[in-house]
Image (cartoon, rainbow, N blue to C red; front, side, top):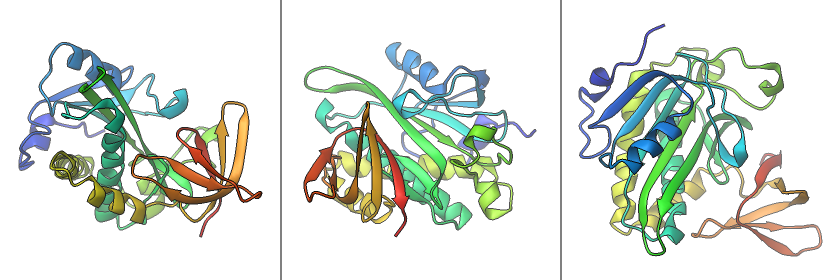
Length: 263
């Protein structure tokens, strides 16, 4: 297994902020856990935590994230956006767009975004994003963006095989992880500075163009409730609207979304 090398990643990275400090570990419980602890101790903005494997990798809704050694990309980035907590969704949208653009560019595959932040190929998950933060009433103290990408995994556990895929399974070729990480960090920084300059509408339009949720029939689980209908629109605050069979349009702030039919 060719291990990731922080110095090799930083070579020719050419970012202004993200990736100047990279913490690498072979195995961690979760890169987000490490990054959250570092952030609480005053780690510099732009610090990246990178691991070869995770023993308790996690995603949205409390799910675990399959993280075998050397076959995926498991990283977290510490940011300190001067934003109020009610705009934290912008950070998640930013990470989804940056990751989708990176994977599309390097693999040539049609990677799309399933609301709010799953990276999909042919209705199977190839990557995911988990944003966690500490905030006061008026501002975000820090945000940790965790990104997991199934790069070169070719064998998934039986219970995941119908739901997930990898770049290698889809393209037939192994992925060079270091160029992928470099491009991902550059894209994150590009979009991060864009939203800090007040250009979130541009980011949002890009997110919408990459969405595989809008215009499709969806099933959303919120606790014990199941909502089915047509995903009609997403507002800039991240709210998804679903038109049920009754014609009523329901706003969805959080939930587990499954696509019933692709466009």
